[in-house]
Length: 339
Image (cartoon, rainbow, N blue to C red; front, side, top):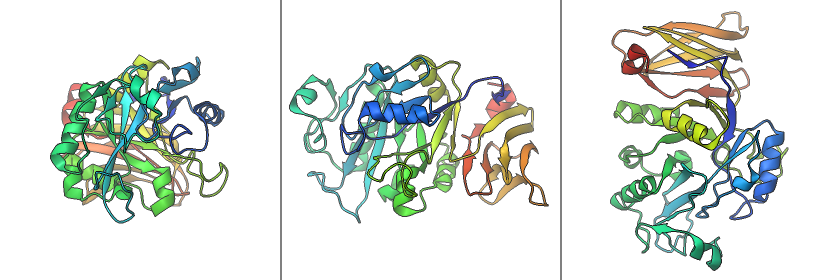
C-alpha cells in the first residue's frame, strides 16, 4: 500500500495562526498573502475564541480553512498565569461556513464584538468554564458533534499533567511541532507524548503548525512564522478533499524535510525523502531502526523490514540542520490489509 506517492500532490498547510481578529498583528488578508508568497497552499486562521469563515480569501491555488482556537484556564475569570496549566484546542470546521461557538463565554470570547457574538450559533454549556477533566472532555465531545475536528495544541507550553492529557479522548491530531511555543520554551517537540498516546491505544494523528501572532516581525530570527507545517496529501485543493485527507490521516508534520514516498509491501517499507542525515522507523521507545550513511553524506531513501511482534510503526526524517519530519502511526491491520 502506498501511503505517500511521488505522483500525488502535497499541499503545504499552516493549521494554527492568529490575526488582528484576536491578538495577531496581521489581518486575515495579509496572512493569506504572506503564506501564499511563502509556498503554502492552505491556511487556517484560528483566532482565540473567534470562529470565522474566511472563504472569501480562497483562490484556485490557495485554500482557507475555517476554525478557531478554544482554551480553558484554571480560573473562571480566564486569568493568564505563567505557572498554571491550561488547555488549548484548535477547532477546524469540516465545512467552510461553520462558525459555531462552543460553550460561549464572554470572558473567553473577549475579542468578538457583541454584534459578531450575537451572529454566531452557540452550542454546549454557556456558563463558566471549569478546568476539570469531565468539563474538558464534554467540551471536546460537543465540538466534534458541532462539526469540528479537534486538535490538542502545544502540550509542553500548556503545562498540563501528562496523565491528564493521555486520558482525553476525541482529539483527531496532536501538535508535535509548534513554532511559537518553540520560540517561547525551546523544546516544543512532542514526539514522546505522541508515542505514549499510541501505547495507550489512542491512534490520533500528528501535525505541525506555526501558531504565529507576528508580534516579532517576519524575518527576525525569533519569528514564529514558517517554522513548522503540515503536508496534506489531498486528491485536490478543495475544502471537502482537504477535510477528507485530514480525517483519514493523509498528512505528515515537518519543520524542514519532505517525504516523497512511503510504500508498504507486506512487512517491507520503502521511504524516499529530501536529502537527510538519518531516516528512522520507530517501533518502540527502546528501539528504532535507522538508515544513514556512515561517511556522513546525505541519505534520501530507506528500506525497512517490520519485525513480526510490532503492532504499529511511524517514521521520522532528520536533516543535518536539526529540522525533521514525522508521519502518523500505521497499524499492522493497515499495512496487512492495504487499507
